[in-house]
Length: 417
Image 1 (cartoon, one colour):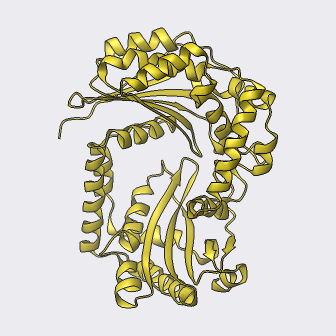
Image 2: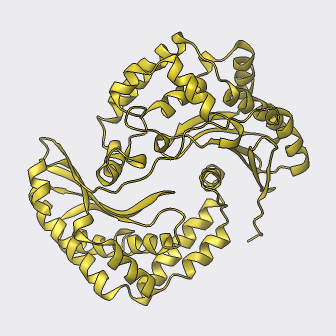
């Protein structure tokens, strides 16, 4: 594998620039990451980061010359998308190398806009309310519900799309104030991946981004408070989705890799403990999965099972028994070798998926870190059986469990614990 290189610089206005040359690619991936997501909101402002993304992303709201530039680029095959997460908002453009300068110009115009209109805000309000209804009528909301069950209405426990009451009342003043505070150079990171010469790239970046002003007043990161609780979404179905989680390592913690491997050993594939026990031996569930969720301020290890409602207590008890076993005995050498190999293979796959690669690079950059596959694989390889056992003992504390159930009633979930 060729040695990975990241070239990084900081413009005089504070904008971070990170370039990872991939000369074998035929396309360029550009991502502008803004350190503004639902993590930077409180209960009353929850949803405003996502609202802002809608307002400035929609081509129909752009000035005529910007809309013309975007349309020309899309006609030339350029893809353009925006996304709001807990930790950031991102704008991504994928293009051919000959369109690099025009693509950077587009990103600079869109993200530097600080003014909007009442008409634009009202137009997007209707769309976002539809999106809110759709989000809360599907199982896709379960992951964020588990965040909320773990952290409540603090920091990353808030929903990205926001509270319906907030969406209904955000006005022009609130949105433009947030734009002024957060869409500034020193809260942004420009990430690029592909066949790019750094000297010419940096000249273009300076031309389009160098004149941006920074802003000393900004939204501060809010503290995280862990308060595990139980959330039920009762339905008439006899099948349920049961999710539960235990607080663990944050994204930048040295213990993150041990937590990842612990989750993989328990429920990360066809040879994982919970798959073999719940599906193959006891036939209690079709879907059983363990995974980790990590943010810069905290994280957890989670379990998701789809089963019959009548089997819920037995499923929960079986998983609890497996957690106790791994707390006592850890993992075997063969288990550890298997989950390490699977993690490493998945990491190698990132190098072949430029969109995923850019997403990981951008998130790492927002958190003040870099992403190198070889560094990650060395960190994974360094995890020992003792690290896994220690992580299990520290994480799987029964009193710390947060639970979400789609199907059962609240009292049924409370009986589990």
